[in-house]
Image (cartoon, rainbow, N blue to C red; front, top):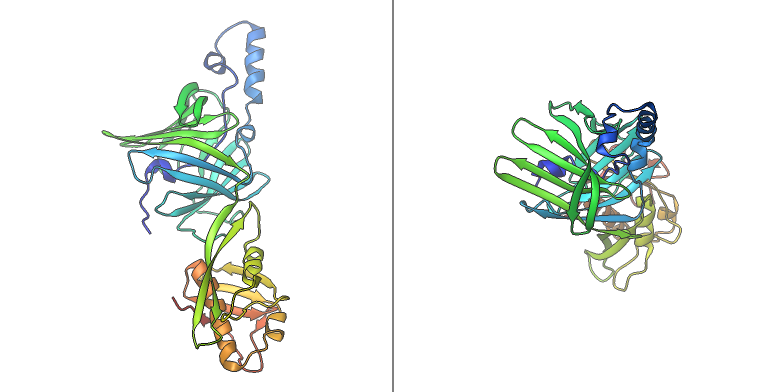
Length: 349
């Protein structure tokens, strides 16, 4: 997969913010005491958390110009109080972003490219945190990023036109050595437009539409033994995930769905996935309950095909070569096959 993105896309997040006071008021200009108190009151109400929508089961579609990867979709895989995990797909790769609102700051606390699987990273910690927005939400608020770039709120009442409509938005400028990025945020929506400029090049991404109550749908290969032959076959199934759905439970449900002969079942009715995750060592760890072994009812050869089906299904989902299988936290052991400590299943692609 390609890993090169426009800067505006890598720094993307859909923060929600708007200027409730006019630009003149936000600057706190000299006036009578009553007017100054009014300004202070309005500024106090502009909290970062009020302008960052954490909405589940929503899809944001952005239309790009100037670069093939400037168009992208944003969906929400997970959210909890003060944190959200975005899935950003620009057609070249999928980026996972974890954003946090805390102490008057919106920060990107973790990010990873090429996340084609679905896993909860809300508790993950990155080496570098990036402040995307910071109080007070008034013109002139500025801060320096760790890479040396400067970011500043430069307008609180910018008029922005997009395919989804016209907005009154706050403008945030990020200045680099040879480039600048303008991000526009509208109340009740979030990011509505981004513009990246470097020399004569200009790349933009504008909000095209917002789709509500939309699940994230993945096409996943599930492998099965062919009863009539010594081989495996797969069925591609569409699995729908809503925000905060547990991946292992959805995959378990899909694997239990009946298949037509000559394919044999892999997960029995009472089989459960106790845990499933991709470890830092690049190995997928899956722990099943004892029912997987007890209800298998297979000879040695057929059992090997079932285990290989498990390895291929979950190994290919996470795009790895090794799968570590355990049963209720213990080494895999049946009447035909016993696995030793550290032994793994090799994924066949």
